[in-house]
Image (tube, rainbow, N blue to C red; front, side, top):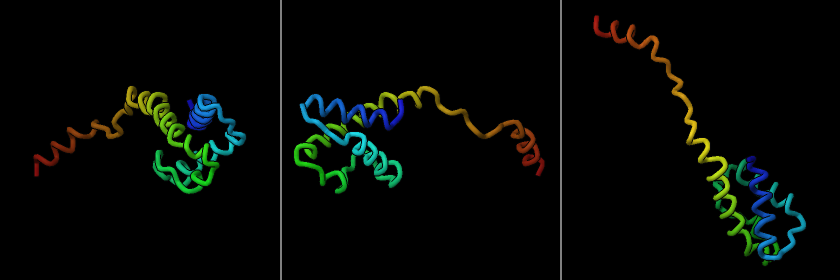
Amino acid sequence: MELKAIIEEAITKISKENEVEIVSSIDLAQEIQNIHICQQIPIGIIIENLINLEPLKRKLLPNIYHRIVKKIHKHIWKPSRRNPQQPTTSTRGLPTILAKNRLR
């Protein structure tokens, strides 16, 4: 699942649960993605650009962020931990290096 899809799903789900119509949900999703990917602000920090929304939508932002973090944990972070990357260092030349160091 892509980050953009996770963000859009969170916005849609929270707005439906609270019976609030977020007209520009795609714009909000893009703004959240830009803040946390392009500007590299840690997820969960809500900056002024998003606080300037209507008061009702502003109240929903913590719930939206909570759902985003839960989905990232479930769909991105956990799967990446199940398949850890293999070590990049090669041990093929290690016995030769050790033998040379012993001779010194």
